[in-house]
Amino acid sequence: MVQAEMKNDKQQTAIDKANDVWNEIHTSYERNDIIYDDWLEMFQNEIERCNTPVIDLGCGSGNDTLYLIERGKKVISCDYSFNAIENIKKNFPEVHGTECFDMTKGLPFEDNYTDIIISDLSLHYFTEKTTFRIIDEIKRVLKPEGMFIFRVNSVKDVNHGAGEGKEIERHLFETADGRYKRFFDLDDIESFFGEWKKIFVREETMARYEMEKILWRCGVQVKK
Image (cartoon, rainbow, N blue to C red):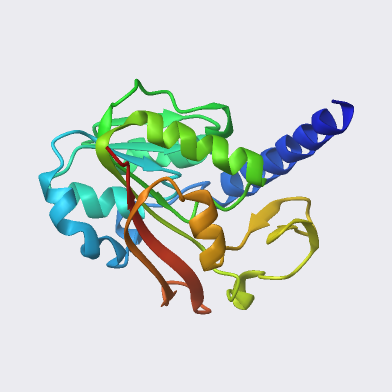
């Protein structure tokens, strides 16, 4: 019990340190500065059919919020960073809603609330136990046959820290500043989403950053 409490405390410390970093990153920016790539195009049919607000989990600067708004979708932008949410409110006054919360403590939505939740590079900062708990919450909030669309770090993402730092768990590393960062292989995807229907799972390269990033793009569906 004591060891479990210590591990939980360390996880929370890592989350809080990460939040400090993201608050600094998201100090201020303008809508015209926001650039998105086309990773959601693969799921455009599902997005077009969605009649509920799309939850953008870990929205950051609002790349995907902007993509969805431009396509006429209602979006609820969510992040743990207060500054990120304040910038969303400033840059996207038309957004359906915003929520500032720590996803490790649950999602502030009713059961069966929405047809689609997206998470772009925001699900890979947690221990295995916490990751499973977040995924269970995502499943709870999704409607039957609802879809979770996400991207996560690949174990091949050496340009962005893969294999660096102290390995806390398999593929979860503690960075030099005390944050956690997880990297996924196909076995990890299967492990975390074994109870979901796999619609699309592919490892690929993203060129949005200065150095190319290797990640997994995935779409999974709640089984009936």
